Length: 180
Image 1: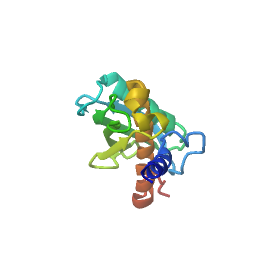
Image 2 (image 1 turned 180 degrees about the horizontal axis):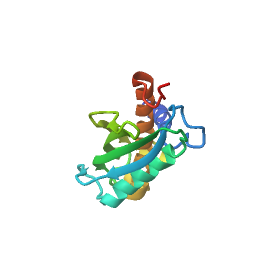
Image 3 (image 1 turned 90 degrees about the horizontal axis):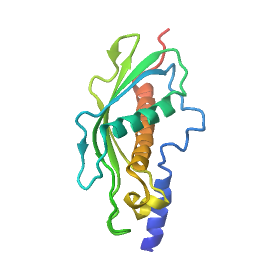
Image 4 (image 1 turned 30 degrees about the horizontal axis):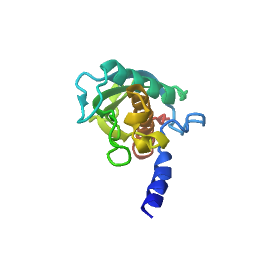
């Protein structure tokens, strides 16, 4: 019964892949176009039992994933992202199925309205994402993936989480809608 529960949980969590919808049309965001995609990591904290990641890996991977997701939007209103990598854990090999550390990424996101010259969110939005569950990560992504592969997975999940945040803010706060 326990194994069956783990198997079902694995399938449910597998649906959390941040890149699986990139071949579909983007979710509606109003009149949105990302212009500047700025990602920094000057004070990123390496979590316990984490592999080391360079600032270039942290920022490059996240910038690429954000561009991959948001360059699909072709609105006329210009917006900018300021993203700061605050912390990360890139799982190392553990004891398979007993101690399988999971990778984690913590970021702060600020969205700027170019025309108004203001931040849309006065306080940065903190987003925490975990690695997507797949066949290799059940055993432990530290065994089956390089640090670069783990970071790509986390970055895609972070870009998807940013998109979900923007959709939520668009509905609740009217972000990205043109005032007539």
